[in-house]
Amino acid sequence: DQLINQIAAGEVVERPASVLKEVLENSLDAGARQIDVQIAAGGIKLIRVADDGRGMPREDLPLALMRHATSKISTLDDLEHVASFGFRGEALASIAAVARLSLTSRTADGEHAWRISNTGAEQTPAPAALTAGTVIEIADLYYNTPARRKFLKSENTEFAHCQETLWRMALARPDAAFSLSHNGSVKLRLTRTDGARRIRELLGSDFFDQARPLEVSAGDLRLSGYAALPAYSRATRDEQYFFVNGRFVRDKLLTHAVRQAYADILHGSRHPAYVLFLELDPYGVDVNVHPAKTEVRFRDARGVHQFVFHALQRVLAAPLA
Ligand code: ADP
Ligand code: MG
Image (cartoon, rainbow, N blue to C red; front, side, top):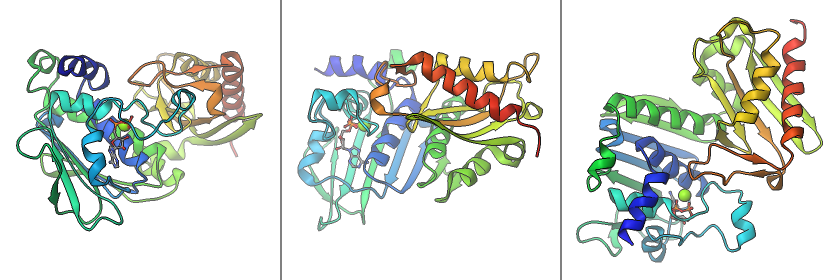
């Protein structure tokens, strides 16, 4: 069982940033509006996330670390079309298989918090102090799987990936506040705001002032966000954010549709910059293709491609106001 968990962990949590992604998704699934992240040594030494979500009662704490004991699905149909981020119930079990993990949590009606950890004396819940929400601490990632640890890059590189993970989450959820620190110094502090302000805060006014706002619907498809004009094109693909039903994706079909929409106005080796949100009926998209969940499969791939291409092309081609 431990081995199965370690193998599964390899897919779910291949590096600190993928651990952070799972943990952030859990916080958002729990309704958190304030999420504070502390990273030490690129996340290898520590990933600590505190949220103000609804928390877990004492009896749920041991379940949270067990495989497939998720609270978020009850039927197979749910599994295929879940609205929440997490649904497999394997992230925490996988992380617990390759790190020292502790959970401290308190529900709104709890008299105090409870803490559980996968090491030491607290493998059953013990009383703890916390005013509200949940704190998860993941320490010494891959301490028991040195082969995996060898694949990690430098601390700064791993931290950069963690920061990127937080950016993606923050762009998708401007209604939540975030903070991020590395080795004790604060790297990012974001208050709750609207989508436009969040994008400007993260990508800067250089991007924002050169970007066209977008808000196009057709049938049950809706595309919104900001796409930069060629003057703001980049040498790299760093500033390409595409979200499908609130999840960051890097999808061939969508990337292709965007590139084609820019084809007539963007030349050479430059790359467009954009933050785009596609919304559609959850039944029209399978987000379950890969555990890391950045690829998607559309029921009507052709229709989605056409829609994104035309919506974007029209906005980019409109004359300057
Ligand atoms: P999943 O998210 O797929 O259900 P996870 O392994 O990621 O599975 O989490 C297991 C369970 O632990 C969740 O279903 C949820 O009930 C609980 N949980 C994890 N993190 C939090 C959190 N920050 N706040 C409240 N509950 C949480
Ligand atoms: Mg989860």
